[in-house]
Length: 325
Image (tube, rainbow, N blue to C red; front, top):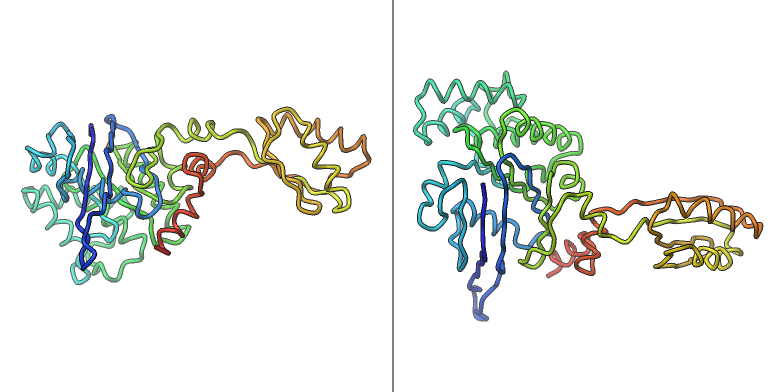
């Protein structure tokens, strides 16, 4: 559904300083039909710029791409007919009724009124919008508005839909509800989904495959589990009496594959290839030295650990750095 090679986008800076911003730097992408692909990275990494190029809203400075079987540069109209696009800010008019908004969107895609209304009714049922057709869009909840945005992007039955930060600004319950609707769309309609997000839990929960972007470049791709497997083992935190912390740390350091060892009073932290294997051995060794284990936590690798391994900083740190810039 998507093949891109060497996509780049530069912007000229405004103001006296001038110069260029190199927002996207030679991105290669391959997305197969039926996949749900998460495009993960901090704000400012190039996610939305890449998305806007793939949806014909921005012309690439360099590179080529085929989207939905149509060339991005020579046949942008063909691309637009094959895709749906749900932007971060949504596209509905606050003073328009839900039914009118959906009908108008369908007519813009040259659907007959009857076909647009039939498709709107179908999407209302699938996206839990039934009974809202006469409501003004400004009266909808955040979750309802986001589901309406998705319905607008799907009104013409595209084979590929782009979702740009779909759950930004939603409360946890609304986010979980939206995730379920996105899963059902792919399962029931066979829609290919390309989803940008900076939420780690969203990327992990929804994606068949992840593509990680940082500073305009693709730094990794693979299934969530495959990416997490690249992180060197489980992180273990053990609590002991503060007076025995140094001795406990020395014992932990002798475990096979132990690394990143640190001790703070009675808190001993380290990483091992498999926490479930290391813990019984550690418990026996501590017991032999009469060091009671007061607490223990084993943390499996997360996508934030993946980002830290790939870039040298966590996604949260990258977000904070972008906001401070």
